Length: 548
Image (tube, rainbow, N blue to C red):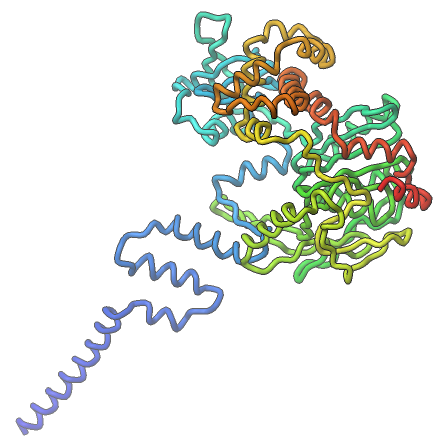
């Protein structure tokens, strides 16, 4: 009996030991084993991150690791889907909204914040700040020196509308620091940078950088101004415009089309087809129109060009556009970040999707292919542009246009490099023109402020030794003098310097008037209008061929 009891205890002890051993073994060899049973494709990343957080041998900054993981995941999609960190989202949203909470100043930073321009009617203007003022204190803290970054300036000066900031200002004609308490207000971010009569009866409008939610309203103001001074034909410059608001682009196109014309349509896997159709309320259905494009014109810019081209409504002049035919939706997350995800493709009225070819996860190759296009001669020769002729479509008057690869202009104008030299490029790359213009304007502000319009100031500048001064300034800032190149391109150097100086006193409109005064693409657009080749009739479609 005793031996049987002993055997029973032994068996029980062994069983208990095995159970305990299994439990301890599971605990030691991997707590994640249990989680594996509940892992699905949708939660696998979270599970792995949890395992790393709990079991990895060294401490890990999980926030940074997660941010990097998201960037890598989104980068495996198309080249235009992207992740926006919380620190950048407000700036991105401000650009699209067309305004931000701020003080209403343009500034230049060199050890201190130097105010270049004060927006008329804005908070700083009302408080009494003037161009040339130096911001040396912000909220009683010294705000100078190499530790002050562009991001720090932006986050310090901008803020919620209605909040206050106290500035300590040093002014040339004052022997003490001046204090201002300024209430932040909505500051517009304008995208229509210039609107003026470029030739008799021809209005020029520059929509620069992007389309925001306010671009259409700005465009209508520009059109109204030009019509009031007698303009009946229009050149809309979309060069270097990377896109933006789909809605703003559609509204602008509507101004030029009769009722019932397709503007653009979009569709995707989970995105039901939506169409934008002109409603006949546009004010300019019969006016001559030219759209200017280049290799940096993308997305919303291409929507405008594609709709005008497919409807034979006007002429597209310049060089082949970028080729972005994808629609993104911005999904904001609870931590303040966002994912901008491609959800659809857009199509021009003829059915073209102008998106360049890409492979998932190969954004670097996609971007390199764009640079290769620039280097293969297509910026200089229309024949060098590779077109997939199997993707042919027809405009309403039967002209052939092509998809997949941007908008090919009706009239090709090669890139003008006649003014370029290594010296001029160095001036641009080192931001010499902008720095020189500010220094010159600041040094001569009392004299230059006396001129009431840009033409009179321009005539004065032409009497001054600007060329010699900018050459000397450039040498002081690391750009070696190149006498032959300077002599050959002195006119372009002067035009660019004049434009930057004028912008300090009369804004973007004056800048573009001067900077684009010898532009060959604009010259071709003016010629087309003067020959009535940009009129929305079938006969115009024949006339433009004479200009090519």
